[in-house]
Image (cartoon, rainbow, N blue to C red):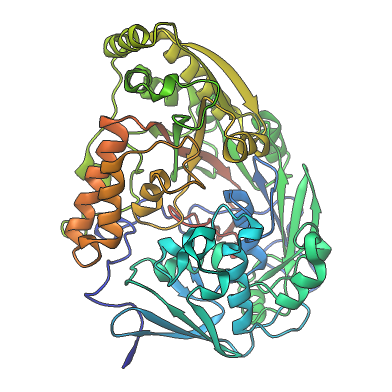
Length: 566
């Protein structure tokens, strides 16, 4: 027998905002605003309404099978819809799905696609579009960095991306029952499965269109097909990309009735001073601040400060480094961890970021029994202790027989705050005895260096949660995760704890699962220093107070689909 909605008492509740309050979700009082190009509330059909929002980095990919960064995911959600969407409170709600049913055992989900769901070329959105879209992600030929996400979601045969599994993409647990019915099979109940369906890796792809475009698919406006509320109308690399309301979208009339802006432009400006001047000139509607800009603009109407889910950490190349095996030494890694004065780092950044206490960020997930935040239960696993850092450094130097030099890889096109953070990391590591050479690169090149080539010593990188559960971070550092664990750190105890939480006793016992993740984080961060947490990203912003509707999500993808006039 089938039942509607979420499974009660069988799977874990979606862990968003402990005690039922999501500290990081913003409703209409923290929203985007119109530029000088916008009209007033008396918008008519003849008046095109526009909003221009800042992006600090260029758009990398519009292909849902290959994108890896938040900016690309935001752009994709503008013009492509999934079965579900996240609302302003991070709750999953139907989008292209008209309805869904869940079997009593929580292992079979059946989705009915809306009859009026269409692609921008008039083709109906079909069940096969979802089958094809999902299969593209797990297809080894596409080398997707998110091919593991179906395994994380407990989708049957989610490991088919691994050529050694003996499975193929056709074995993935999704099928088209008929043109408008999608059936998904899970191997175990998943409390965050519905939320994941709002993530671009789970979006549909029009098979005929994609195959016609071949290797040019999603590389330009002409080679992108929308089924969401907007269509992509221009894309100038390094400058801007734009979206206009899609009159083929089933909710088009509702969007118009709600006074949703006709056009959303994402301007790419990497220099914070230039961005602020553009905002003050009313050319953009949102701007991110850092350093002295924050103090100078705290009283400006529209100023807001929000804590994001992104956690920045030092990824250390433990086992993939052909040129330097110093990082296999535990004392080296412990010295790096104790050397960082994280409070001083975020003070220098002055952008709303806070010092990290572990790899799980604040307000991501809460204890299923007590409602306590994960960080409250875990406590601070890292601390600044220069004397201890020097002791570990000297012990490492004695064991290795030489001084320790490292190259720190970081992004140069993600704003001044990140550059300051890298410089601060260099300073504090050198205080402990290290010699640190900075290697700043544009994000796309930085990703290639450590993800593709494994050519790095230490990289200042980040992870943003794809869903509101510790697993979104814990999975990254398993020894079997060759996609994300670029430094090949491995610890059998860590693997055992995470696997127990995900496939062992933790499946049926939320308390066991929670404790497994708490213990695993201690192994990763405190005992073995496999990575070094640095800071949780904040965002000091000014948002033009004339419009509202941007939905900031602590987990998942920020939503710019609903910008409206006040």
